[in-house]
Amino acid sequence: GEDVEQSLFLSVREGDSSVINCTYTDSSSTYLYWYKQEPGAGLQLLTYIFSNMDMKQDQRLTVLLNKKDKHLSLRIADTQTGDSAIYFCADYGSGNTGKLIFGQGTTLQVKP
Amino acid sequence: DAGVIQSPRHEVTEMGQEVTLRCKPISGHDYLFWYRQTMMRGLELLIYFNNNVPIDDSGMPEDRFSAKMPNASFSTLKIQPSEPRDSAVYFCASSHRTQNYGYTFGSGTRLTVV
Image 1 (cartoon, helix red, strand yellow):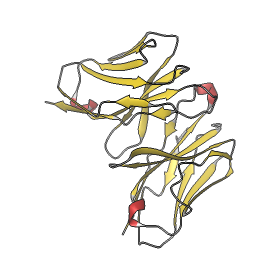
Image 2 (cartoon, chains in turn brown, blue; image 1 turned 90 degrees about the horizontal axis):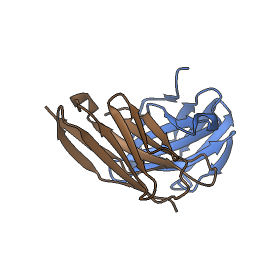
Image 3 (tube, helix red, strand yellow; image 1 turned 30 degrees about the vertical axis):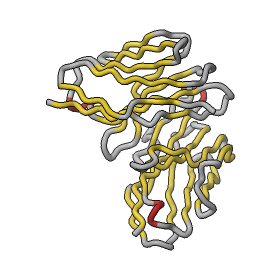
C-alpha cells in the first residue's frame, strides 16, 4: 500500500531556515499536506500543494514538490522558537477513498 | 464554525471500565476519522466514516473497540472493557471533498487507564 516516510528529528538555531523532508510512494497522489502539532494539541493544517504544482509559498513557508522523485519538502524561513512542534507530511492519492496517508512526523527543535 | 469538538478532554478510568469518547464534526463535512496517538506507535487510523457509514475499520485493534456515527453531527468511540494499553490520545477529524479532503482535527481526548 501507499507509504509516507519522514526523518524523525531536526534541530536548528533560532533565525536559521528549517527544511523538513518527506518521501511518498503513491504515483497517483493528487494533494500533499503539511500539518503541525504543538504539544498537547491536535494536528493543524499548515498548507497543502496540488500535485501539478512544483512550489507553493505562504509567508515564511515554502513547499517544494518533486513529483518525479516523489519528494516533498517544507522550508520554514527565519525559524522561531514558536515553530518547535511535530510536523506531519500527508498524501491524498488514488482510489478516491477520502483518506490521507500520514508520515511518522518530524520533531523540530528550535534552539535560542 | 467551532471546529471539530471532542469530549471529554481528559479521561482517567480504571481497568475494566467502559469508556466513551465523543466527537462533533464540522457541519457539512462528510468524512469522519478516529485516530489514536502514542509515543510508541505514532498516529494510527482506527476507523473512518463517509456519510455516516463505516468505510474502513481495519485499524480497530480489538473487539473491545467499537465506533458509531448515528447522524452527521455526532460520533462515538467506545472501549469496553478498557485496559492500561489503551492509554493514548484519541483524535477525531473531519473533512469534505470540496476542501481537497484536508482534515480538520479536534483537540483530542487524553485517555489514561489505570
